Image (cartoon, rainbow, N blue to C red; front, side, top):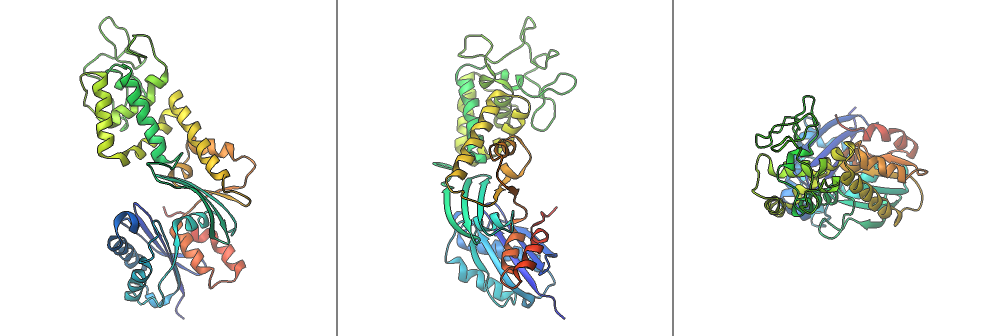
Length: 375
């Protein structure tokens, strides 16, 4: 007897994942491909990437075994529906996939309850209320330029602004390495964990490069020569400057600020990657990073409160699914709520598809098997 299969698609702005499961939740195929967001990358490219991942995930399985499928797609484009049906047909899958937004499958990745809320913070940020797995209300998700408060991009932009402001106020160029975390032996270390040489300057026991006379170079506020606060130097500013500049050392503090601004303008999306540096600096006790973390958590929970009524809250997106200070701060603010963490979204899409052919109790029992994260 041929075993029935279900297919789930998680098509996002950076990658596409396709999961193939049996009806009891056993994963029998999984594949990744390029971005599947048609709004961001164009319809043809998005469909091609989804098709590539589908072919790899199906492998030797006959598409005719697929009894249900669902595609969760970021960047809804109605023209994608017939295009995906053509791709499904080429693989002998009897019907094209159900077509949903990525918010729906993100929520389903964290709970088998039909009603509740999603709070997502990755590169962007959005909160949503769902009823019967259908989107009922949405807050933020307005994009990096005018919205997405508390997202990875927002967090990274705040970090870049702190670094630029510090050097604009006169923080010495030498301080780029002064606030870096110190390894055993006294040398500051960069993001790669390797010692950072600061222009040949000697390093004293505290890990700070020293000028003539043996006095440590510290953060300066307003160019007055007085020791500044961590918001005008310290771990966060050093990590951000090192990330942008590497071994490059501009000739003046203002030149450092200008260089960081130009590099950020040339590739604004790199700001999102700085969110990891904020977490690292916050864990090291940097007050500026801690302030950004606190503000990000506050923004995210405030966005959630605009839509949440009842039911579980599912946390999704790399900022909230990874252990770190932002997740901890959000969890503290959500004390008293039922909070779960999203698992595999492609598996969740497959589970939503399977609900159409399974008894409710059987579908609920299989939820964990479908949504377990792929190693």
